[in-house]
Length: 410
Image (cartoon, rainbow, N blue to C red; front, side, top):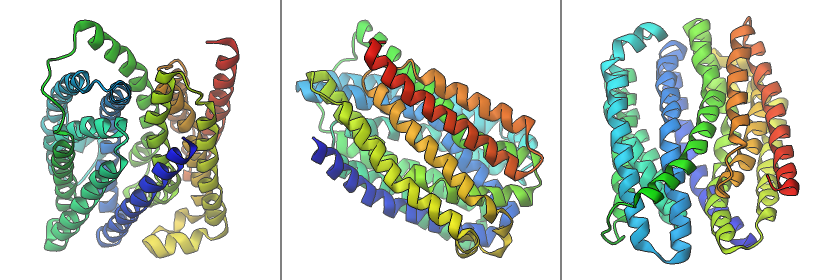
C-alpha cells in the first residue's frame, strides 16, 4: 500500500505539475498584459472561485469517501444512488450561487471597487457546473481512478488557458479571462461525467444513508470554511484595505507562495480514499499519515529555501519589475503555505476515518487569521506574519490532537 500511495501520488503529481505550470503561465501572461490594477480584479474572481470550494469540496469528499467504501464492498448500485443524491445537492446549491453572484453583481462591484460587474455575472452563471464537476471527481477519486481524475484537471487547465488567453488577446480583457474560467467548468464536468457514466441505474439512498452522508459532510464543510478563510481571506482583505496597485502585487505574491499547497495537493487526494478503504477493512493506516507528511515536507522545504535565497529573481522572472515591491515577503508567504499544507494532511487523514472533530481547529484558525489581518494591516508584511503565526499554531495543535486522540480513543 505504500507503493500504491507513492505511485498514485506521483501520477497525480506529474499531472498537477503540468496543470500548475499551465495555470502559472496563464497568470503570468495575464499579470503582465493586464497590469497590477486589472490583474487584481481577475485575482478577485479566482479567489471567489476558491471560496466556492466551501460547497464543492464537501460534495467531492462525501462522494469520494462513500465511493471508496462501496467500491471496497463491490456495491456499485448503492454508489450510483449516492451519486444521484449528491448531484441533486450540487444543482440546488449551484442555483443559489447563480443568484448570489449574478444577481448580486452590482453589490460585489461596489464592495470590492472593481471596474465592472460583468465578471461576477459570467462567473456566477457557470457555478452549477463547478459543483457538479466536484461530484463526478469525487466518484473517480473514491474509485482510485487517478488516471482519469488527472485527465479532468488537464481538461480544466487547457480550456481555461486557451480560451482565456485567446479572448484577452482579442481585447476582452478581464471579461474574456473570466469567460475562459467559466467554460472550463463545463468542459471538466462533461469529461468527468462521461468517465463515471458506467454506474448502474439506482434509486436514491434511504433516509438513514442520507443522514449519514450529511453527518459526514458537516465537518468537511467546517474544515473547508476554515480552509477558505485561511487560503483566501488575505487576498480579499488586502483588496479591501490596500490600493489596487498593491493588491495586484500581493495577488502575485500569493500566487507564487501558494505553489507548495497546490504541488502537495495530490498527496492528500490519493491518501484520502486509500485510508478510507483500509479503515473500512480494519487494516493499519497510521503510517500513511507520516508518509504523506514526509512527502509534503520534502516538497515544502526546498521551495521555502529557494524563495528565501532568490526572491527578487523569482518575482522578476515570473511577473516583472512592477511586482518587485513584495519580493522580500515571498519566503514568509511560502513558509505560511507550507505549514498549512502540513496541517491539511492531518485534517484530511482524520476526515477519511470519519473523525471530524479536529475541523473545529481549522475554522478557529481561519477566524483568527481574519481577525489578525483586520487588526494588523498597516503593511503587507504584517498581513503575512499574521498567517505564519496562525499556521504554525494550527499545525502543532492538529498533530498533537491526532496523537492524543489515538491514545485516548477520542
